[in-house]
Amino acid sequence: MVRKPPASAAKPAEKAGEVQLYADRVRVYPRAVQGIARNVKWAILILCLVVYYVTPWIRWDRGPGRPDQAVLLDMAHERFYIFGATFWPEDIYYLTGALILAAVSLFLVTSLAGRVWCGYACPQTVWTDLFMWVERLVEGDRNARMRRDRGANSFDKAWRKLVKHGAWMLIAFWTGGAWIMYYVDAPTVTVQFWTGTASMEVYFFTALFTVLTYVLAGWAREQVCTYMCPWPRFQASMLDEQSVIVTYQKWRGEPRGHGKRTDDSQLGDCIDCKACVHVCPTGIDIREGAQLGCINCGLCVDACNEIMTRTGRPKWLILWDTLARQEAKAGQETDARRNGARDEAIRLLRPRTLIYVSALVIASAAMGTALAMRSLIGLSVQHDRAPLFVKVRDGSIRNAYAVKVSNKTSEPARFTLALADLPGAGLPGAGMVLADDTEHRTSELVLAVAADSIGTFRVLVYGHPAGQADGSQKLGFTLRNMATGEATAVASVFMGPVR
Ligand code: SF4
Ligand code: SF4
Image (cartoon, rainbow, N blue to C red; front, side):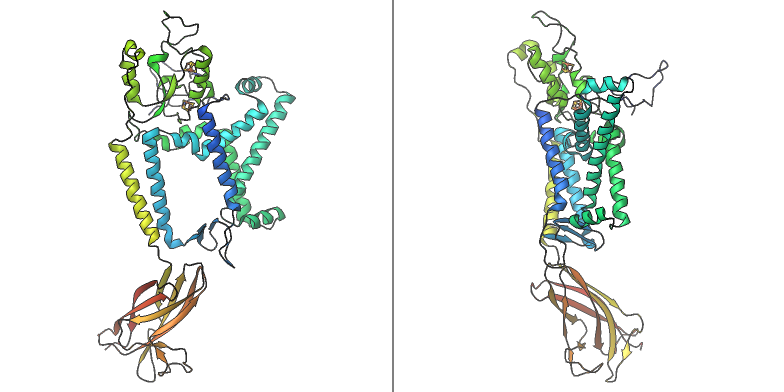
């Protein structure tokens, strides 16, 4: 697909009939605007930033010796803490489930309302918006910025650039620093950072995310949404003529032109002021129709409503609507529209949205069930390889196993470990004094494991020579939490001499 350069771009020299595959970047100078879309964008921006910066500082009491940060991806100890839940590395499939849920939700939202995620809640949009707000505060609105950038170098230009980039770097640093706090305890790493005692990884990743934020939100901006992000390419396949997107009502606006409208005027409502283009953060002209670069932010809706109010024309020349409704409206006779002909309804329920909703329900149910049935107990048994077995004085055979017991609860726990499948097998009992003492063998061991940790035990099992030619016999281990009753079992083997 050959992409159109932004509407404000100067066209590169083209030879007749030659398709240009490259267009120089034309700097976009978005103008400030007020209105519904802008207010919603501010609200979402503030919410996202507060959640991002504040979350690492929320505390959550998990008991002594355990991290008290509510959300913590503790790489060093291989745990992910999120409020009352703790996830272990083997719970990675929950992350897969969460990603599937997020992806299907995004598909559904896109098929209903286009790229609203991109326009309102994507981190690239949120931080770019914040950086643009700082830019406006320091360098003024669109016209002042353009004038200064095109003018000669001056003290005024220099100090404003310096302050703007300084503020951007500060925000970027704060953002990079906050990112690190999701991986290490926030108060601890803050003290360590400023006293020079943090690890090299902390300094490296803070610097990396600082630079990334500064470059992506300060310099790359709309280039990320238009060229770097793969999402616009996918989203085209999720949209149809019933998706609600930002649309210019061509049938009402054209033919566009300057000048006063009279009753017998041949002109449409668009006065060609280009306010919609000047506020667009990606620099496109929505009047050219739906485009890949449009992030559905609605700022052009606000800008045009402002103009329509000033010119005394009805608002919503640019609005959120479906292509199907626009086609129907464009096909209606002017008289029918004047007489209030009813608009076609917006069809939210259609095959593609029903498929996404069904996928969402199934994925949510599967995820909910998996979480509800999540096991808080784990058992792994490894048979010793050397020696495979030992003959003891009473004629029985002894095998040794490395047993690992996972206690995923937030409390210390006691577990019983029992044997199965091997008649007559025994474990060393509590009163056993001498090695291989036959009198105190037991069928069950009690193992204590600290909260949220793995206990490692060496377990001896006594059995009798096998009937099988290769000397192996089936042996099962059953583990039960004595407080909760939750149990798990694993299969192993008991080895003896070859017949
Ligand atoms: S803001 Fe409205 S009137 Fe002005 S150019 Fe855009 S569509 Fe036309
Ligand atoms: S065309 Fe309008 S909705 Fe699309 S990105 Fe530009 S301002 Fe936002």
